[in-house]
Image (tube, rainbow, N blue to C red):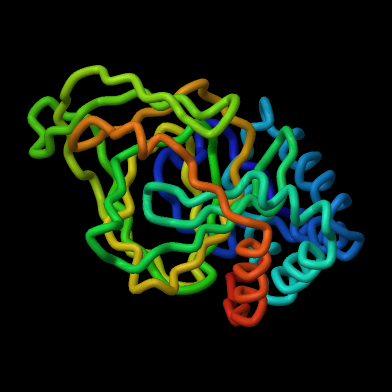
Length: 275
């Protein structure tokens, strides 16, 4: 029998999951809900996360859900259901956009308790340049294909890296997010993680991180975010962010359909199994 992590023992930074972190009962609930359709899946994921303290989601619950949804059979079924459901596909299109951190962000499912996001990363290039940042919510993510390298950072008055400390406020209405500049600070890298296809990891809110190498253009990640626990998050930039970079760039419905059809034919990923 699996026990939920307590606040005292929950991971405090990036944690690469193993089968010991997963709950077979949670995965079974997700599997059953998925066979019943998109609405049942959204409801079940929401219920599982709402049972957590303030809907935050812990390592085991988030990891178990994303492990089940990223199984090849589950992912194929989910993508097929979305492609056959016009209103659901329209909702995906309405909440998806090109992210300036260097990936195409597709929000596949969501309700008040969670978002299930598909990230399609660009190849390593000058265009990819991710700012150091944290998040307002805990999340778990599975690498469906490819690899990436992420660095964990901390503020340190003696640190070697000098960045512009910004407070990031997500867009409430429209597509423009807010950035408040707070002056320059020093930071120090703590640890670098190289994540490969098949890895599942958990990261709590407020973990400062930066993807420094998103691979060669075939990296795909499936990410489950819980209810926000913070109103704002932190962002450390090398310079002031241009106004043009604060505008989310949406996709057409045909582009969303094309992305999902392309991924449907590439679901050979093999995630870890529950113990």
